Image (cartoon, rainbow, N blue to C red; front, side, top):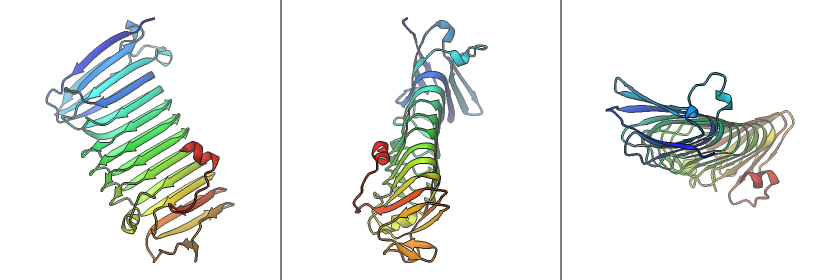
Length: 319
């Protein structure tokens, strides 16, 4: 059966900022920039009864855009699979929220002026690429129940303060290669999956990188941070897991200490020696990057980028 297709355009109507909310039960959602108006969308759907609803209102200079499927009593959970292609403009800051029950989500931030991004899915792959200059962006949240998650940020984010990524199951890839002068907190959580976090940008205020893993594997690659001063700016890496394998890759010559607390666990850190309740490397002089791990029965490996790496099957599959 051929799908119906609608093209919808929405004008700003003189707003200074917009909250854009997209809700989809099942299907494929692509959100990108480049619209000449506030929104230009193309919507494919199975029948007239499932024609998407596009609503826009303005109050006190702020606009609210809502795109959703129609509400049908007792039928929404069994609704059709949609294909939505939504382009947003860059005339005003946009607070973007996407909520998808089942399906794939792709967000490409180029050509949008974003103030925040909040993406949530129950199942299906999610890819969020916010590369470019996003001077208004203050917070990023990506939450999934199951499916592959990917977050890429290779640009300038002078106002960004928090990044929060969480998944119940499925691989998670995070690559932060841009300029983050105001980023203070990066939080990543996974119940069971393979997590890979690569930080090779610039971080002027990052106080804590927190990785919470129930079971599975996680790799935190800090090797792109080139200087000891930048390593100091990272503050601390806090790792928590019940049972799992954590690997932290340090930049060359970065001063670092390790505090490992476990009921029954193991730490593998070549080049580190005991210093009271901590382990420190040769560059440590009382300050630097602090790695803290708390686990019931897990394993921590800390190495520098220059160390020879023997990849485990889990890490090879995650990358």
